[in-house]
Image (cartoon, rainbow, N blue to C red; front, top):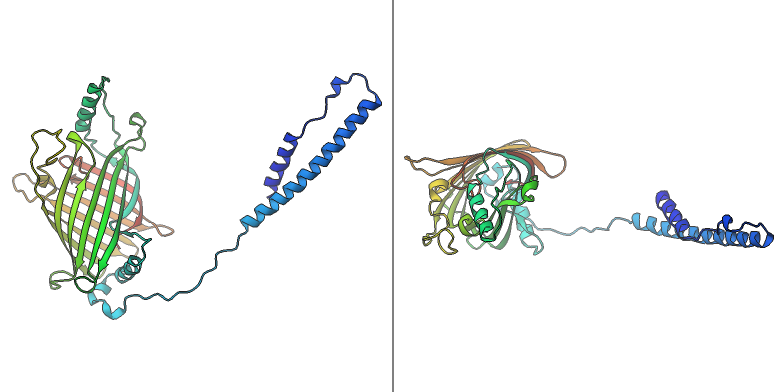
Length: 369
């Protein structure tokens, strides 16, 4: 507070008119001296008044800074009883707590739940930028506008982040622990360190979906999901990518490990006669690279976890796929650090038919479990 007071006093002196210069009075006489002394006295009085004002302001600031913490009260909260959980739910640490928390949050209209992991990877490196198609598209636009052709010049280093939320619309509609949810996932590839292209977002994938979760056929799996999934990159012309799927997922839980298997059916679209058309299938061969499903495996060891996502097109003659590996480790606070490695096809929609290899490091705000 002394610094605040000192600055205010200094400001006060700056606002006060300075005494008349003695250089203007070449003849010293009593009248001039008396006038000067009178001004000095008035200025000292003004400084004293402003100093008192500063003291009052400082006191007010201290009162604001030293605010007492908000008072709290205890409320009764009902959670799902222990006997409602099947034995398999206790095999994985944190699963019961997650389900209880989600049920409480679903009753609150001001809360959105995490869906897929939410993370920020400020530092990633990709081996190929695959910018030929973007280069051709942007140069065609420049030619139409009478501008000179130039390369976008994408960097191999990018900032990648994912934001994913869901909202439970209804629960217990198909028995206990069944839910109907709407979800949205945004994954962005940001050329944050690239001044040559004004740090643009090279690619953003949008993924809204409607998900029905339920328990059935428990000899095969502990939990099932059936969803309608739309995925697109919001681009136009030859850069547009999108598809719609019906996805069936099955989850199996063991102590400290989890297996999630998905199979999907792509809803057919009309073919395009020209890539620049706004209506029709943007990527008719996407299934040849992303296949018909994927397998996710997660293993926990204390506060650490390792996960793998594997995808394959099941085509013997032209076999392609991908693997994504994550190592997650604890950090101070509620966030986690992680390192991610991707190798294969389909990391992003713009590169669904291009081989890509990437490694990155970042933090997770929320995780699967």
